[in-house]
Image 1 (cartoon, rainbow, N blue to C red):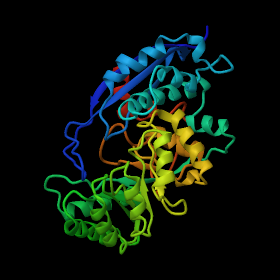
Image 2 (cartoon, rainbow, N blue to C red):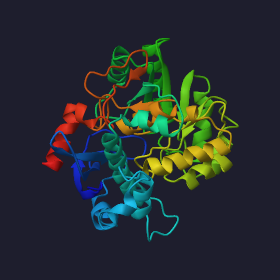
Image 3 (cartoon, rainbow, N blue to C red):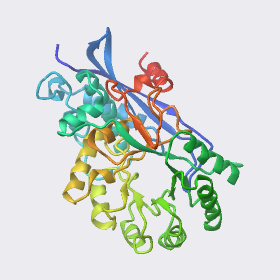
Length: 389
């Protein structure tokens, strides 16, 4: 019997938290959880691929249920198969989802498509009987490396959170094996942020490095004022100072901040990523790119973004995706990215690693699990099991 997708299910889940960054609070945050059910039977059960969207963008249940899922399930099943006819073809499925869509306007639909795309790749790797990172490496003629650098993202503003609590949080990440930690800035004022940064630097000493993230809060004058402050600290990077589409601001900022900068998590297509590279003044010898496949049309589009980077002389090692999810871990290991974000304490159970995987010296080693490995993260798979019955 030919492989086919029999059903696509979605459920909108709450991942709310009282934390905030410089731009938004997460008290009403949601995410979409998707299951792509196939007719392939393994161990007496159908192969199901799972996906979800990253934090910071809300669940896309309406778009998924009313637009994109139906285009897949309503397509001729044969048109969605790869050249062997024995597995699904993610690019053909992606093309079916994007049929009758005008170019541009990447905002929310890129999240809906990226969520389904994650589930499709999970199913494809499971049908192939491989971890996704090994399947990707094989397709790109690379040697897969299961070791991936990860950094701990936290340092959010939180009611009643003083400097002692911030220091304790950062120390806890070091105790769990991380060598780079990240904190939020721009949510209070430059003087208060200077105190917060100095408190964290005093806490971590030479045991780790600190990255800071403004979440796009600053205008150019404020971004420059922070740059003049931050360049005196030994930071891992200065992240997303201004609006993600203000490429001129990003380019101008490089004149005032000689250290590494990072951005890209809120760019949702390879065209927007290309504009950042063309006009954003990003420096391939030191800066970092944070495109997140789960928010930007999925892995099919992410591979187009990587191809664009190659054309412009960028190494894929300069990519450390946003999102803290296992999908980006698989991509990092399979395609040789520079690492991945991690959320040790927030947005659970959607972030993190399979059970038993530990951070050692800032590195995680991925086990050989079929697909993306969601089934081996027990708290996450409990929610996935509810979706699929």
